[in-house]
Amino acid sequence: MVKGFFKNLLSKLRFNPFSRKSHIKLGLYGPPNGGKSTLANKICQDWLGEDMSSVSHIAHETREINIKEQVTIKNKKGKELTFSLVDTPGIATKIDYEDFLKKGMKKAEAKGRAKEATKGVIDSIKWLDNMDAVVVVLDSTVDPYSQVNITIIGNLQARKIPVLVAANKIDLKKSKLEAVKAAFPQYGLVGISAKYGKNVEDFYEQLFKLV
Image: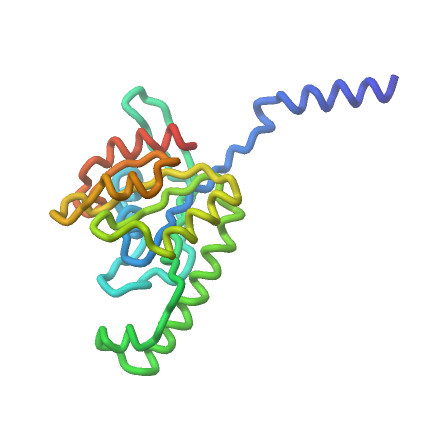
């Protein structure tokens, strides 16, 4: 009798709508300078009225995990989606302090930046285990068939995390949306300009389908 009671209880809990995970973590991943932080800022500006991350033309501006809690977006039908937005450091397979020297940094600063950027890459990979869904932000003017992109996608596939590919910088003439689509046909794709807000409405609609 007791055994039957607990079996009944477990059955009810399994289908209890209040037992479902309600705290969704949405991660922004991609190589350096793809536009992750610019997109994070656009999302937060649109729905919270504030920026989230600092941006720079120098790679690895974001070197720590940035989280904005309780971001709520709405679609045209009035449906709401709330999530924690996680802006991650750009993932790279090689980080050399000499690259920062070329940007005008002094040696000590360049070495410090390279060290922080390396730690940021490691943290980004570790945080994948906390993600419920991921937006891979790629520069659509750059060849998508890179070792970095394949590494990112491979890690996501291994963890079976839902993915949306955001091909950024479609405002530029060198943008090749079809090339990005051909590289990762297994995932949904949306072309955007995070800087100018082009096609972000479609991006938000895709988030509802993703999550």
